[in-house]
Image 1 (cartoon, rainbow, N blue to C red):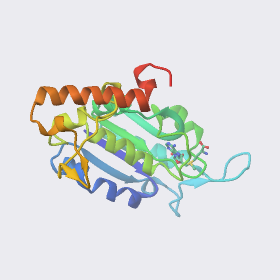
Image 2: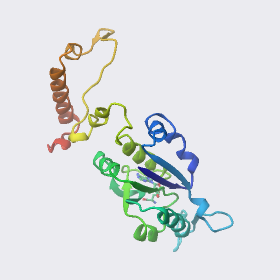
Image 3: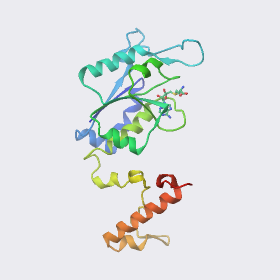
Image 4: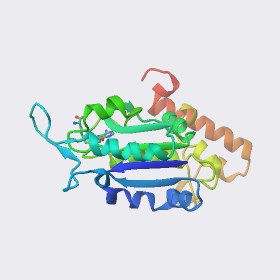
Length: 227
Ligand code: SAM
């Protein structure tokens, strides 16, 4: 899979993709992540990517021309399944959407800045708009990193124990069961006996029951129940 992220702040995106699971997935060739500096596609001598809004008002707006140049350059080399714009008014990102996007071959993610991007980019170049929650961040870099991380950990081979991603919260609309590690007792606080008994089918049954009970308590909406 290939993910190309367009940004005016490339440095902000270096370290999230240079650690842990994503770093290993890149090294193994499971995913190629390219961070593209939008300023390289500005034809202006100051490498500007933003300008004042038509009609006046506060804040700057990302210009269409550098974004168009950048996306045209990328799409002239390969076709993309989605050109995503991170935006607070987009579709709310979810595990379901992460699963869907993890099946794609090539993605572009455009990180916005300032007051946002010229609406014509959204109308003519973007295929999907994604929000990571009902709050406003300064830029789309952190959302792009969140979306990329959630996708990459689902790619085959990215996580050593393939079951691990499948047993995470939100897969099958259930929250994850509790997990414990050594010591089996600390300050008198004991690990549930079932987990140290070695009976795998019973442990699986217990985990499933815990998942259902935690989901019912914390997120009954996932089970289609009223809170
Ligand atoms: N004026 C915009 C509005 O009210 O919707 C907010 C612009 S915000 C300051 C700058 C950029 O950050 C946005 O263009 C978007 O790319 C990104 N951004 C901010 N919050 C986000 C969120 N919750 N989800 C996804 N992207 C977000």
